[in-house]
Image (cartoon, rainbow, N blue to C red; front, side):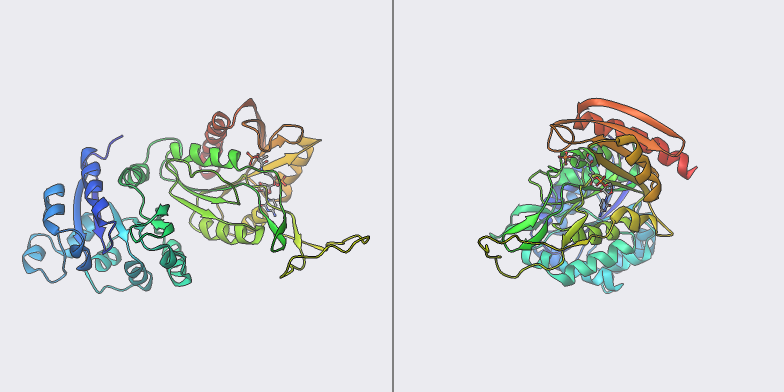
Amino acid sequence: MSLAHRRILLGVSGGIAAYKSCELVRRLRDLGAEVRVVMTGSATHFVGAATFQALSGQPVRTSLWDEQAEAAMGHIELARWAERILIAPATADVIARLAQGHADDLITTLCLASAAPLYLAPAMNQQMWAHPAVQANLATLRRHGATVLGPAAGEQACGDVGSGRMLEPLELRDALVASFGHGELAGLKVVVSAGPTFEDIDPVRFIGNRSSGKMGFAVAAAAAAAGAQVTLVAGPVSLATPQGVMQRIDVRSAAQMQVAVLEACAQADIYVGAAAVGDYRPVCVAGQKLKKQAGADLVLQLAENPDILASLSAQSKRPFLVGFAAETHDVANYARGKLERKGLDMIAANQVGEGLGFETADNALTLYWHGGEAELPRTDKATLARQLVTHVAERYKVARA
Ligand code: PMT
């Protein structure tokens, strides 16, 4: 793993996670990167500029109006110098200003003035993270091509527990390493869906399925190990986020999964739909627990859910599409049918039922694409996912050639 001579501009905004960015500078330099640090005024309340100066071996800039610094390396020169810009921590405030296109301090000005890919490592209180304004700003930045790294969930400096912790320095470093590329999917953005969807009937009941998420999580891990920047859209499962996955979006229903996948895929090169998306949902979700009517049958009216893969394939600019087909019988015929009907580039078919496919630790797949197929015999899901990723990388290259 190397970042030799790579030029990384680290923007530090004002959050307690700024202390982790000191470690990040060391880890980036361990791999040979040149790091220049720019801080917002509020960041300097958390960590002194002298600390970053000592760790980066370069002058640290905190203002647009520093004449001496401008004379040494003007801000436009600095913007051109950067091969990657990483804002870590990225506070709600800097995210909002970037989303609005402000240029009211050095960091925001540099981001506007640079053609370098922008990476954001959000860090904030869980309530702030969940606020629709923050999420809307991030959605805008993603549409503009920024990559959001994390955040992680867990205990926060303020004592709350939830999403909003900045990723660890080594995870951020690995993300930057991956962005420069090594591995079969180096430099590509891959979105993977995994797990089941739950369609609520009332506050205590839902329609779900047996997907554990293991297959999709293994695909996300394999894609990250192959150098991709992976966004994992997960249905309700109890699995830890695989190492190297840049972003995880947890959803519950098919409708929520569709929104998350479509948004993530706006910038993606490849989408792998390993999720077992519910085909139907109750027409009405009862606000209160449905009471048993003794002696009477209960009829549940279901409406068809949107097909996520088909909606992606209908778009004019769409990622390379890999679907899964879970079938109990006549696997090849149904899988080929879905490949055509959903407008996919590849489909991974698995036989399910009787201890196969769902919930199990291992699986077997047959891959179909236009003009070819490949058999991946039964093995553990991690190995199978690596084999699948190799085939996806090959077919992707052929398709884009
Ligand atoms: O999670 P595990 O326990 O490890 O189990 C793995 C698995 C069996 C769930 C996985 O290997 C698998 O087969 N996933 C797809 C299951 C499925 O929903 O298959 P399907 O044949 O019903 O759907 C075909 C494809 O269309 C899938 O890629 C699915 O994500 C997609 N789809 C389906 C419905 C819908 N509304 N939108 C979709 O995009």
